[in-house]
Amino acid sequence: MSTNTLSKKAETRLIDFFNNTIDRKDMAKVLRQVNYILALVVIKEEGATDLEDNFYWLNELAEVLNPYLDKE
Image 1 (cartoon, rainbow, N blue to C red):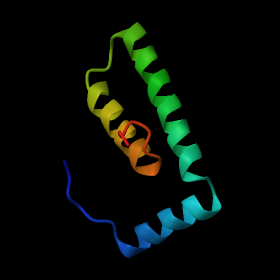
Image 2: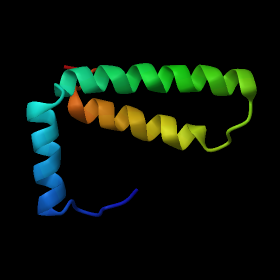
Image 3: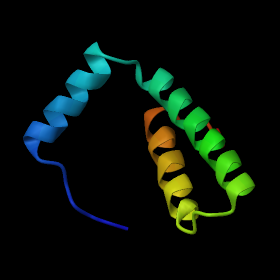
């Protein structure tokens, strides 16, 4: 896991993106949908070996944007 921090410019651009381009909950939904489709394709193709890490990190980003799997 990386512990790099975002630059102020990157942080500002992300804030602007989620304030003016797409709602964070909508983005989380899109990430989950894409992640699911990618997993299905790879299962059919059985070709990508590093999908597990990609699947994990996309889900983590979706959870940051809109916690869905957290117990409340």
